Image 1 (tube, rainbow, N blue to C red):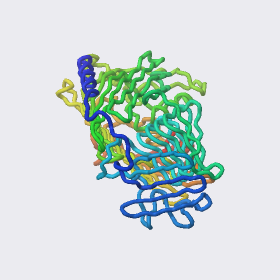
Image 2 (image 1 turned 180 degrees about the horizontal axis):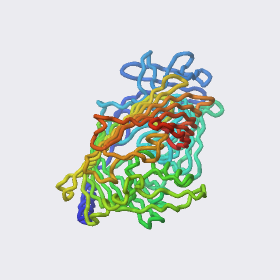
Image 3 (image 1 turned 90 degrees about the horizontal axis):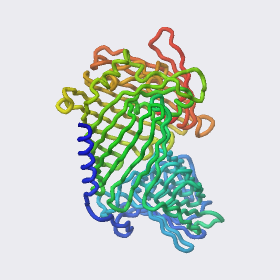
Image 4 (image 1 turned 135 degrees about the vertical axis):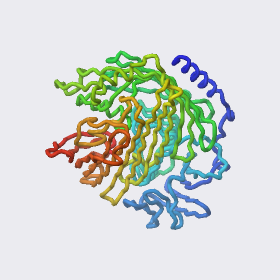
Length: 581
């Protein structure tokens, strides 16, 4: 049954890659395709800004000494031109997120940058499958595991790129650093700043900078490194108590200007589990500008239902350094087909059909870690009472193939993750439905919803709040139930101390900037209720903890937390890496 299902998926993938909406996308033409929001002209001694929006227009000619930069605004000769998230045109604010694309022109002793406005009524037909990352008076950092489909643009802010950028990287009065393994498919340009490109970085376009010796035109136009079409290598290294050390290698192919589908292929091997890992995926875009996507994949992978708690990269750090693995795992072999749609720039909906066979894998408690102590890893699913029964629930029907539908909804604003000095909303939803008629009497659903808010209160304070809700039918197998407790859910409690089919989890944090921009002090409170069949609605038992910590930006946090449902609660001291929110 699994082989027949995978064969059907493979045939559908081949059919999808053959769909044609048009031969190529038209090249971007600023005269016909979109409206200009901001034009920057650079000469040897002067800079000119020309703002335009809905009949409003402002023009400025200036040098660097005419600029005043405050924490909440940027002014030229005392006249405000920008706030932290908007342009100021004749006294009216215009959202920076209207920027959709940037065009860069370089001639002798003259350079020109045109920032084009996204418009639902414009007639441009360039491919808009992207999400820009934009900032004013803030630093932008793109980590190694992030792929930006649009451009990265900072006004009066530095940019550091470690990941992959599909279009241009532009800093207006800021420096740009392109780190090892970074991939830039467009140009790299810094006005009034410097550009540093490491030897192992890949830049498809030109590398330009200006402002040295009071010459603002792009006098140096260094050609980047082009690796054929749009091909980027995939290198990953994970470590956990099931697969042990697991290296992955592969590549991604993406052609920006035609309707050739995107292909992703990589493989790996879990040396402790002695299991091969592989993934082959195809994704094809069919409509412009609100993008309709079809795709699918075939894979054999290690799966965890705890990805909402901690990423695999951060979990690898704990496993290597502290003999701590915060996830449970099972093997999934199969494939999927799906359709996706962007109704809004930052809102993505996806629905698909999965065909998978699940397999139990044992943990290896005595795996090595840097601590070198006698501490051992927990068994896989050891948090469940009688977890051996969970083994049988996975392997009890070895010949059975699961068929289920999955729907996902994600709202992720561009500013999320830039730094703590901003405000934004974010939300996600994941629903799985196993129909009874497709799974020999097995029927259940599993829903997970997350919403969060970051609110900048002042120059020194920021507040973060997050609410997570999970619900599953009572026929769900034990290994698919929700587990909470410990870091990432309830600090101060035991790791995965509580398990159930339904839960809600709330978190609120207050951060204070101390000493330097990157050093923050935190107070946080967490509360949760978890049970089976939503009995907590009638008689809730609230679990809660209170804690405090200090963090270096959102890279690492040292914290202490205490639970409040015991007469003599213990204090937990911990270290958290990655986003603390």
